[in-house]
Amino acid sequence: MANAYSMDDLLEFLDHAGDRGLMPAATAQALVVATRNILGILTEDEKTDLSQLDLNAAIQRFANKRAKDFNPASIKEYGRRVRRAVELFLSWREDPANFTIKTRTTSAPRRKDREVEYSVPATREAPGEQIPGETAGTYRSAFPVRPGLVVTLVNVPNDLSSTEAERLANFIKMLAVK
Image (cartoon, rainbow, N blue to C red; front, top):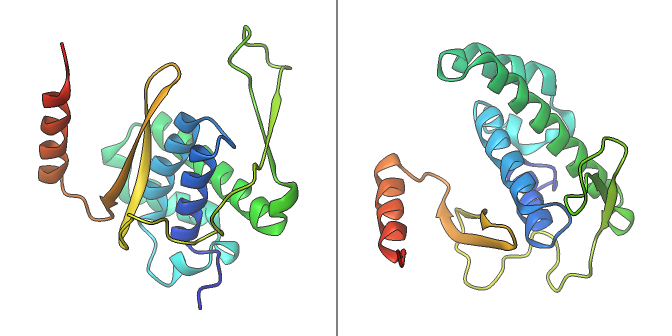
């Protein structure tokens, strides 16, 4: 049985947090992208227990391995996001009933001292339980189309190729009314 601290568990948590309103969907998606990129360089053994992972070393390995693919500011931001994602995940695993996320509010002008807490709403499915209609070996991803409207893609293959992504993008373009 899995220890519930794997990379896949972290990604499921981020999807759950975005879908359930624990954090803005765009924030959850940004954390997912950074997590997939940085933790994607780990071995399968390292991906099984993030609670024992030297996160700073993993981020440095990513920077060394993929420095030519990203500018330095992006690598630094990805590192910050992955640290935040793992911190939130471990906090949620420790005490799911009292889990909250502090984030800035977007309904009023932004001020550094203004924060709002999101608490965990009641869910119908247990953590890690597969939702009907979802396929193993896939994930879901949310995309904010415009204010107040988020589209969720379900059953995105973990190994989605560039060619498949292009086909999907062309299909979505076909759906546009204008």
